[in-house]
Amino acid sequence: MKKLIKYIAVASIVMGFTACDDLFDPAIENIKDENSIDSESNYADQILRSAYILMPYPGDPENDVATDDAVSNDINNDYRTIAGGAWTSQTGVSVNNWRDRNASIQYCNLLLEHIDNVMFATNEAINEMFYDRLKGEAYGLRALNMYYLLQNYAGKNSAGELLGVPIWNHSFSATSDLNVSRDSFKACLEQLLSDADAAIELLPKDYADISDAQVPAKYKSKGVSAAQYNRVNGTNTALRISGRIVEAIAAQAALLAASPAFSDQSGVTWADAATRSANLLKQIGGVAGMAPTGHLWYTAEEIGNDPAKADYHAEIIWRGNNETNCSREENNFPPSLYGKGRVNPTQNLVDAFPMLNGYPISNAKSNYDSKNPYEGRDPRLQAYIVVNGSTLGVNNDVINTTADSDNKDGIDKESGISTRTGYYLRKLLRSDVNPNSTSKVEKPHYATRIRYTEIFLAYAEAANEAWGPKSDNGNGFSAYDVIKAIRNRAGITDTSYLDECAASKESMRELIRNERRIELCFENKRFWDLRRWNANLNETARGMKISGNSYDAVDVEKRDFRDYMIYGPLPYSDVLKFSNLEQNAGW
Image 1: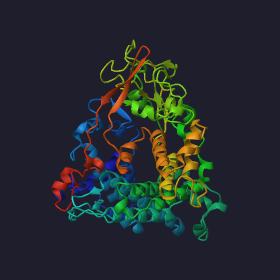
Image 2: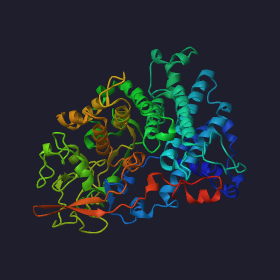
Image 3: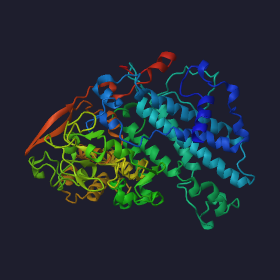
Image 4: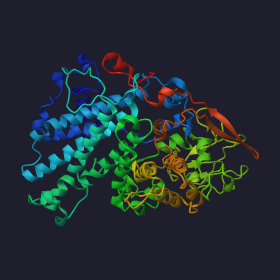
């Protein structure tokens, strides 16, 4: 059914900004007319589902390998290629999001234009609930897609104007004029937040089955029962976009807009961004509501073997369908465990993990021992990264990454499957999975989209910039409180270094960014974080070559990003096709 829906939608609706004479293939008489939405409630819902099909959430690490956090041993990896200086406006990473995000917005607009003509139920009150929810979903999804468009394509032109993308709040057809100018970043942000606020007003906070006493007043006054409410907004609707999810998306967008690369023309302040995050976090009690094992949500111990039991993990704001497989492990386990070792964490990232006393390894107070580099470290290091001597897999095999390893797990032992850095990925993987084709063991995995920890870190970053390390501005928790809770959860209970950092906004900023790097590693965040911070994009990726008792840091892969690459390019084909679509400077 999903494939059929996708084919119908793609054939009948513009996919991004394509030429008007090649919109319809197969011929238009072979597909449903969009006016069918008015008479078929299922088709209306399918149009919205088409927007969901194009979700911008990869389940595996992708762009991390174009940062200082990781490299790939796959020579054909797109992000490995662009990190080496081959990022152009014609590469897939430039084109795909543009196409899919605009197509998704088109589906949302079609739904919004037709939904008032659709009958979902003969009962007027139930019909209204369907209207509210589906309109809310469309507004929320439109905000989500705008956020990803801005993250990927917003940038400054040659005159220094900060541009966003064309705002589409109506559908277009084969006769529409698509040769339009980009709207300003500020206008796009205002549209995004307006859509988000409209969605929050219409959607339930969460999808859950409720009792008669819990029916919202606006529906209860119209005689709606719990059974009727649950038909529309109950657990059967779980995983669709909800009010809480939209609040998180708005918080992400506000953080982007307040960041150094965008703040001069966005109209959004650090205080605005902090408030967006705070309003969501206060609903779970602030730092007191932080999931105690949120940093380990992906592990076998947290997910278990029954996907249904993992539906409501306290860490997860939004997830996709749980998937029972071992594909992540097949891609990233060391070769001795039948993996391809694709994503290799760098020495740069390993060095970012502090000692257990909270001090960075570069600080004399850390007591770091370069001859015993993995002892006494932040427990998240071993939780997220396989280092030499780590155990992994169903039999707790010891992984030997040394240069003189007697198997292919050693650094650079065999191109395409062995680690290039001396490290393998552990985060996102389950230890009780076995990719061996002769005795394969598959387990459920979270398809995580938004986590609370990301919103806590967004608040900490924005609150520190707006009010300083220890001011809560009436929210009940400060940037200091958030970082203390995150580090304490990880096992770092000594606050000495945190207290030193809290003496200045600048030192606290460095710590917050490092905590974000650690907590969100391999979740496709750092590629964009470095850009919104106007940070160094060209730090050489390094590894650790171990021979006997010798530990030698080695250069593995240079980065080649130009200054203008702080902003991504619009697809070349669209800029060439549409004369009013201005490219970002440098591309």
